[in-house]
Each structure stands twice: as C-alpha cells, then as structure tokens.
Image (cartoon, rainbow, N blue to C red; front, side, top):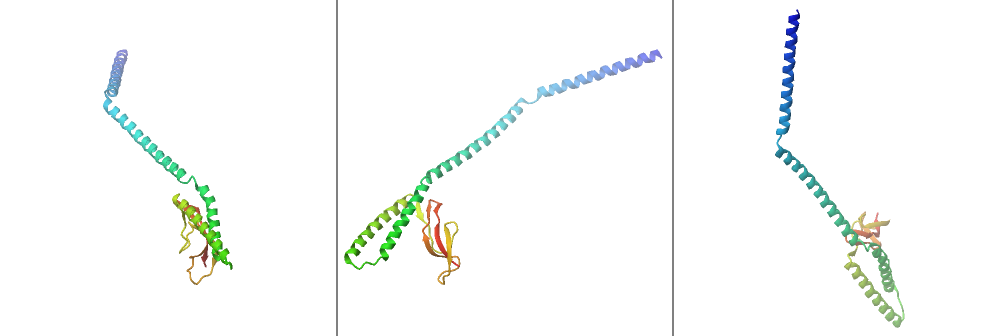
Length: 192
C-alpha cells in the first residue's frame, strides 16, 4: 500500500505541476494580450473623447457669448428708459396746454392773438419733443380698435352704441413704447 500511496502522491504532484504550468501559461497569455492591445485604437478613442469635450465646451462658450451680447445690447437700448418715462409727463403737459388753448374762448381780439401765438409756440415745442422721442425709438401706442392688454390699461368701461364690446372708446392718457418694450400703457376706457 505504501507503493500505491507513493504513486498516488507522485501522480498528484504531477497533476499539480501541470495545473501550475497551465495557470502560468494562461497568465502569460493575458499579459501578452494586455501588451498587444492596439495603442493606435486607444489613442484614437482618447482623441475622440477630447474632441467631443472640446466641441461641447466651445458650443457652451458660444451660447454664453451670444447671451451676453444680447444682454449688453438690451442694456444699451433701454438705458434711457427711466428718463423717457419722466419726459412723458412733459408730453402730457404740452398736450393738455394745447387742448386748453383750443377750448379757451376769449372775446378780445388782442387776447386771442396772444393766445394764438402762445399756442403756436407750445405746438412747436411739443412737435420738437415728439421728434426727439421718435428719434430715440419712443413711439405712441395705437389706441384704435380692440382693447389689447399688452399695450392698454382699461381704467373704466362705458356703454357705447358706436363701438363693439371690448373696443377702445376713449384714451385718457397716451401709451408709449421704447423699441419693442412697453414704456407706459395707454389708459383707456372700453365698451361694455
């Protein structure tokens, strides 16, 4: 039996040596595969990854640049907005003065001449101011036709047989825009 044991041990030793040799062979093959991986393919994959990152970063940069340019243009375009709002009160005063001069009835011929000259002076000043506003892209809001909540502010509703429901009947205060932005909505009365 001892010989059988020796034979078995020798056989087991041989099997163990073969297994160790096979394991070493497999490890060598794996290492060779790692070494034999295509460096060109790896480099091309890395280049593609960097190119994708570059394209995305460049697109983000261009979008930010366009947004900042638009914001800058808006800031420049609408920089005088508060000044323009203040000037509108002067426009209203001129319109009221002209309207009051037209309705004023004076019996004396001399007073009517002075009033006519004053009216002419006020109208000239008013027209100059109106041209300055138009030159700076400040325009009156149209108040004819249907009520538009974007540019009109209804302050009262009246009944009118001459207008349809929702139409502007009268303008209490003119509205103005600066470029495409509403500077002041027109105060209007609408038909019930």
